[in-house]
Image (tube, rainbow, N blue to C red; front, side, top):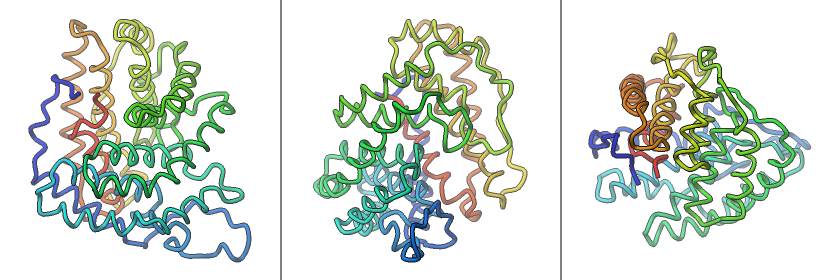
Length: 341
């Protein structure tokens, strides 16, 4: 259920087409490509398309995964749009039984127990959740095809989380809180209660005792996630509203921040700061959705989220592949209210 404090009417077919074009431009674009690849022998020296044939485009595996999520979400929300047919063709080309079988083999290969952990795996589960909710014959077929990889990811995650003694609090891919949030949403959408219980239990262990998060230390120079806001956004998923409000008071007594600006759009790491505006905006929306209706903080947090939204959306420039290959997914997650349930 969307949060009534946030108006999604600015998300129309024209805007959706712009973001779909970003994903369509990259999901089957093999190069440039940055792979995190463990070589076990000379036989592992292969192209990205051979190694991970479903998700080889968009510069890296995780961006390819959430690029496919973007296409599925937009095809679901705008089924009659001119881009919908092309989005469907692109997804169908990627999600074949043979491609997914190789993805599973790769994920389970020797020395790859930390491959795309946790960020890419969380987005893979978000793709699975989107397909699960998409009431469409083709989407149901894709969902079934993706299932072996979905199962491999959840199995790897259940094996890993109990061993992770401390959460990872960076503002980049390794951030634990952000991925746990996506994983919880996946578990609830798909009805995977056992997996959801493991994730929720670890979130409680990691975060419920935290106080006075140093928001003033953010951001680091390459952040696209806010460690403090990501933590609050996952905790609002596991606590009742009144309990969350009390916890949030101790965790972030004040929320003061300004939009970030990108100094060099040709520098992929510097471009992370554009995504930070988008993720901060949706995390603030999530936090507001978790607070009681009469909470006096809702108005100011809502205003700040809108300010960050505007700056973030204005910074997405498709002509710069450094940001275009991934920022569309962040924009769609925000403007379609995906995290608000």
